[in-house]
Length: 497
Image 1 (spheres, rainbow, N blue to C red):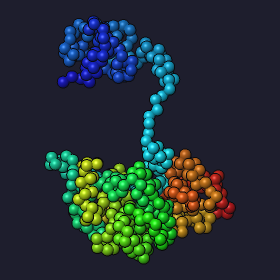
Image 2: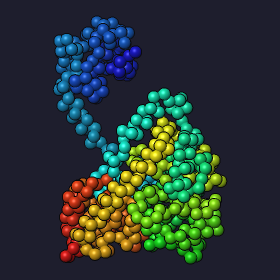
Image 3: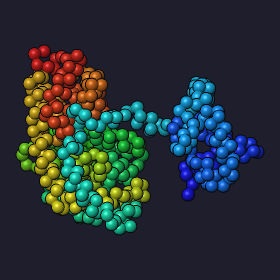
Image 4: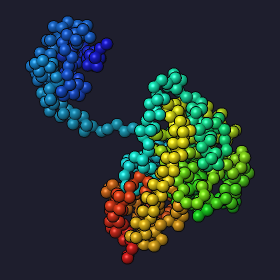
């Protein structure tokens, strides 16, 4: 088996045109050194080994090595071998040539109109861990040793089909585990063949949109709403009409000129405002969907974390054969890097959307899914959620007290329910929440501006503040930095102003 250096030299040899073999070999190695393919301090193969790998005379290799040594491209260390030199004789002329080339106008890549729209509205933060980042759980509190032990045992002797593509919408073990869990915890009514395992909510929304909408179709989204859904709709050239949200959730219009194909809602804990959709609104929305042939997409992203009162049942379980596509995720209950979500598909859509998922995305991660199924069935998942609910409740109370102590009255959101992984710090209408968030982010305080979640010009101002990942011992110091930003940009939001 040839070494990587031998493979590289062999390719470069074929690119050289000199009739003399030793000159072609010399140029091939020298060019590989100069362009960084053979970086400084990298070891060249012994002459005997390279001669055997290239099937040429050892004397030819020795001749080339001696010339490279004499010119300063390589150094020889007795007993160790031949190495690329740290400083090359052509380094400065080569760099000059590179600079001259870099002065040439760069070729611009053509981005599609949809792609450019996406890039002009990028909202995903490059940093996903830090003080007050919304929507991120405490990943350090996950029982990694326990889960790793389950994974290790399952991975010891995997079946071949568990290492191949999955075309069944996920492993049956995880599908059955979710049926039982969702029935008890969320009131969801389904069978295992209705469950599709996805790589997070974005993939689920993309699949549903592609399969149920044509270009130009109308959908309803909450106003404000999660920017990720809007981006997926825009990339599929589907229209998004913002529908106002109040304390009782999404407010369907009294008259409908054009029926929406999809209706996206977060009824158990509206994102980002936190309202809970009332039973009357839920029933009205179901009746509207039946009447107009619409599908409701229920994003139940963090409903496990309700800190008081009774759990809010899922919209999907309110009526038999409800026109609801129920979407859930493990990103909030476990950790985002797991990249596992799930969809409960209405019976008429199940087979078609599972086939489409296999064609568009290909399934996989079977071993992780098997481990997660065991984690759920053994009771570890429910126990972890109970522990996290207590932990997050304490942190929510701590942050609430900080806001009430230092900020003016009515700073906490009117819609803020005792649930979820973030709070909203209200700001006056004249405040520039984007500038405040930008300044805070520069100081490693990762709040997000509320106004960026709106589509219309009527935007509330505020900051989304996650509390789940921040221990109380660190929260107060981080909050003081945020107060400095508020004092600079919006002092009227503070007590005594």
